[in-house]
Length: 237
Ligand SMILES: *Cc1c(COP(=O)(O)O)cnc(C)c1O
Image 1 (tube, helix red, strand yellow):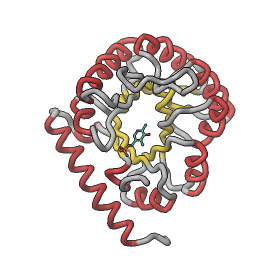
Image 2: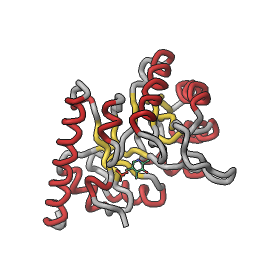
Image 3: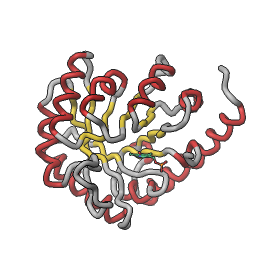
Image 4: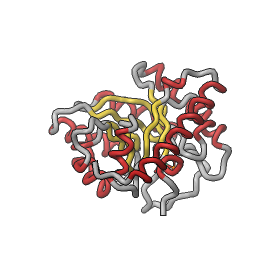
């Protein structure tokens, strides 16, 4: 492999530290670390880094822009990776994303459900979708800006639509902690929503929460999937 050994060593060391933090957070929360999946968020970093991660056993990778994710997925085809799409998704990109993604964490409106469903059927695959929840108190967005998730009262109807859509499976919920609030409090609300979702859809067990800065709070509040970028790959420029 044509990898830079120094870069590989840097990623290996960062990854080891993140895995330790994750294990410590799990122990503190009385949870088994093996029930928490680490998704490495590789946005802005090259396909060669994705290859290094795969060699280190990280097969779950996250991206937030289709323009960047599609070529990276193509360049690393055959490594057995699972691609998690975690960013705002325009309906007209649903076809492209459905081609390589295994999970879409950012489903926030009914039109996206139908677009993803149509394309999952076209590719004859099952695409696992999570409802992204707007936990509130976030910086207000104007009418032209894509929202950061569905409002809590929109979660169940959207989840029902995913569960009923051909080609889609309902995975659970995803959220990003608001900027102006203690992440522990916000993730506790997410956990409560996840429990009520689970009573309607018992197989929807995924809780995607926690980034480099709030991993421990997310694990304490029941996260099953953490999305870690900068702590593994470095601060993005
Ligand atoms: C970039 C990103 C992450 C990772 O953030 P870090 O702070 O670099 O760990 C997680 N989730 C989403 C939705 C992102 O866009």
